[in-house]
Length: 150
Image (cartoon, rainbow, N blue to C red; front, side):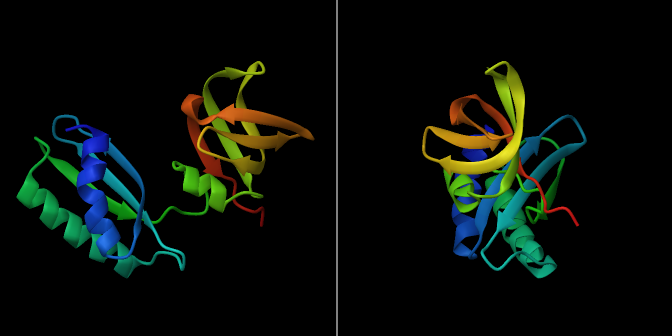
């Protein structure tokens, strides 16, 4: 089962519980596999939220049995340096500082750190040192919020 297929299977359960499935990471290898689910909601995530989703998802995975081998299930909050994986994430955090890594160079560089100015279904615009860069989402490798300096 692909990561996208697993996401499609788990997302309705997570949403019914009142959460967003913000990210899904699957690493299956022999004995030490991992399924990491990141959940979110507007008021934030606490331990009880993670436990609630963990029980529901664990039960679903036991019944559906979509993966072979052993794996650990982890459910967590996005954290301060949350990954931005959906267009809705970029739109929600416009105006914030982000750290972007591209799969291939854009304007001679793969890494961008700056203010997220705008986003749409095709691209995001990041201002770095007073210069705006339009970055196609299809070429994006990773995107994370940069937590405020304390």
